[in-house]
Image (tube, rainbow, N blue to C red; front, side):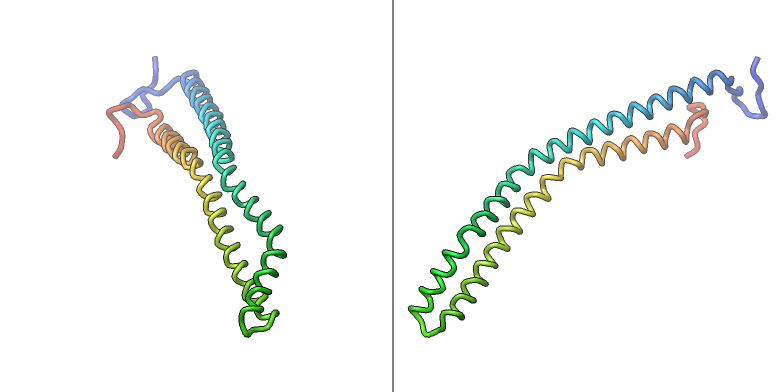
Length: 150
């Protein structure tokens, strides 16, 4: 026979409480495992999506480094020969123009790399849902269905 404890619903037996806690602990462990698997999947997907932008960054950096000395000096000499400015001024103008172009290419590569992390949105949303479920279970555990507070 169960005791009433002054409420309208009977007291739970210690065995039921332990069983419910064990089930809840198992559910939490399962959710943690699934959350970790989803994060690993999202990390793999993010890495796969980042390959293209990273290749673009690598190629643009290699091209910029390999061709800058030859092209820029040649262009500066051409400008200096066809205008009334010194060779040094022409080299400075050409160097700054090349730096601006490299900055634009780098910006585009970084922007593409940042977009590759969008797949972690799923993990974040699922974690939010799981935490909400845990809060609900903790809030309403031990209450009968018709006795919930709003």
